[in-house]
Image: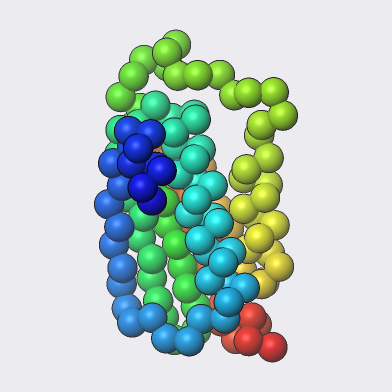
Length: 125
């Protein structure tokens, strides 16, 4: 998270529930989804803040990454670089490996939300 903060993005982290036994593959995939979503905020949104919520349940781990509406005019947000645009596809694939659910899209307030839910029962097999 220090690299994200060094890039100028304020990040709030909320943790709900108690972390139980999380399979290493789910743990790493959830981390990578968070990492990619925050990188996308920096690259595409021009936001100054994002919130990461991690929800531990007996049967799942869910991560949500939400950013506020851009704080800079859209004309000043850097255009995506050549070869970019695979971040959401990669996140979706990471979640699908574990039979999870993934969504990413605009929020009603103008921000963006990435949500990944990893079922723990399927990952434990």
